[in-house]
Length: 353
Image (cartoon, rainbow, N blue to C red; front, side):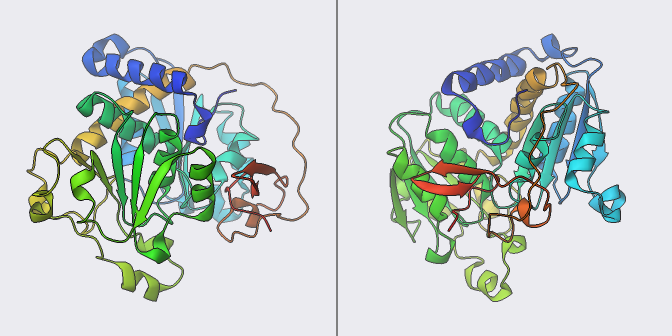
């Protein structure tokens, strides 16, 4: 059974095949209108979403399939105390593919242990967002013609930015990428991502200012400071509005540099940037739909498992990350993996003591 929990689940060859399929869909959409005829997608969104939720639903409809689900967990049996395991066992009995967004890091990985059908991670807290990465890579390849050899600036909340974490993991599969990690020190990439980059010999420079590095970039990936990820509201107040991209700042950028953003934006990209030909974020949202169509065309057509493998019952969570799914779903097995020379939680990637 293939799932998409982390972009690292895909090889470079598998990504190339996925992009080729997305390109075919963009160029000849009518050839794909029956690819998922008779297939059903379950959409489980435990936290708010506009683009990702609508994008997946539209993708399935354009392939000839149907979708059901919820966008508010209070309207589901979760409000009655149902475990994630029971929800997934039940829903995967109805659907051919499950798409999940949750505020709990590692929840999609946990769901994949119990599902009879493929699980797609549509965002798990501040951890990963692999299908946004398929949208990002589709945009870069379509507009710049390549990914290898680019200089990429990631700007904003790099600590909690799951889109950033997924993109870094994806770009490890490409050659000669130069990263500029632009953030306040307290919102720098987490330790496990820094360890991952060093383990994969990825070139990166951490800076706190945008204007000094913008002339060197081929891609500027802006992110918002995410209020919902902050435990301390004062920390959010200190950091909001720290990076604002304006037309004036773009004067020093390359003529073909792409300005990207996973959206929604707050104030980090001024409205006057929208009409600049380098602004690619609305195209990026549309390309995301085609990338998800390519993904669903594959995963929704996999044969279902009639019986899932037995899973060890956990006694207590190994991970100390308060946002990890193991903190609330105590039956989960104590899975550990090695990453960047460290023992890490296999659900949320947090380093274990």
